[in-house]
Length: 173
Image 1: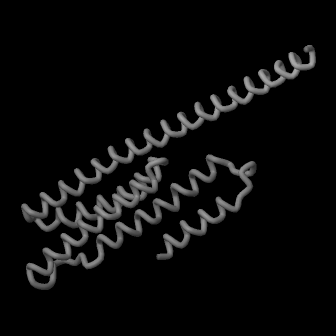
Image 2: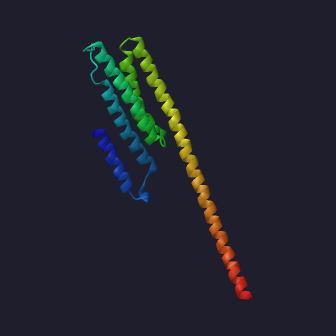
Image 3: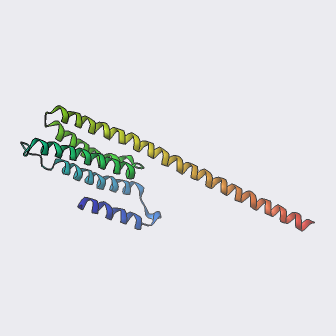
């Protein structure tokens, strides 16, 4: 919660900063480091309950690992949606959790857990490809918007020239 509050506070400070005073490189580093803290925090969540021996019934132990795996998928989906425009933020926010979940599953020496660990890595890679697609789409949309704005400006300019020519023609007649 504290890491997310810190990220929220950083976002508020960024929004309150005058756009002309924004040092892009500095803010980028701040966001990356804060998101890294959040990613490490999520990784810590994935490691809760790890001990020398798993305690509880086999079903309870199995359920806890499946829950951690499901939490990873949700985290990846949410981060991919919100951080796809800045891939470095996506990486530092999700890689620690994937490593922690994979490590937790691998240490159990169970074929099913090995498969889950491999799936965790595969799901992560899939979400990264999806995020790159979202990023490309966002960039294309910005490019199309810039082209549209340029066309509108050209039309406005041509209309002004046309109006001026019409006024001169009317004045001459």
